[in-house]
Structure formats: structure tokens, C-alpha cells
Length: 150
Image 1: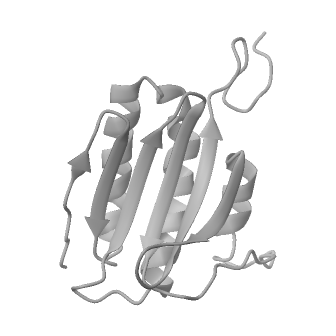
Image 2: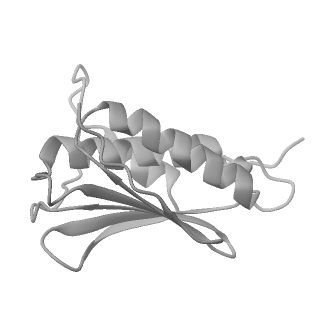
């Protein structure tokens, strides 16, 4: 396994580079968990970790990753919550599929759509694309799922 992990952190952003090895997903989740704790955004942890897992897994499966072209994750703290970006070198855009009832895959972007306030795809510097998702902190008195606490 080759993990090309390079951390660049500011007060409001964390940028990391990864190989496409599946183990990198767990390492990226650990780094995001640390950032959320540092930023006081622990309320977003469950949803954010799942969104990251899905986006990074898709990039690892479908991206064209060579030593010069790694996958990057960018985590940004904002006034309303968190933005997660996954950059890869593949020009192929992600497609939201309708998973078969007995399928073991195809649910990734369905989950991202359900958990994130919004998500999308954008161009990036260099080859490939950037897939992003934004998650907002729950309003006071609400749980992470948006329901009122009783």
C-alpha cells in the first residue's frame, strides 16, 4: 500500500493527499474527525464521516491515480458548518444511480444526497474534477437529523 499523505492545515481548512488504496478512507475519516473536534463541529461527525467515506471510496474506485496524480481531500469550516471536497484526476463525472434492492453498491451518492444540505461537481486546476458536499450545523434545539429534541 502506498499512502501519499501530506497535511496542509490552516485554522479553517485541512488539505490532505491520498493514494487510491481502500485503507486511506479510514485514515481520511480519522483526520476529518480530528478537524471537526478542533473546530467544535462534532455535531456533524456522523453525517460528515459517512459523506467523506462515500466520496473518497468513489474516487478511489474510479479515479486515474498515478504517483503524480493523487486524490486530495479538502475540509473547510464555515460559519454555517462544513464543506468536504474530494479532488481526483478522472474526468468522468459521478452519476447518482438507483441501487438494486439486493445490490451491495450504488448507494453512495444517494446517501450523500440524503445527508448533505447540497452537493455537486466542479472543475479543478489540472485534470479531473472536484466533488463537494456541504453540511450545516443543526439549529438550536434540533438533532443532527433536523428533528426537534424533546
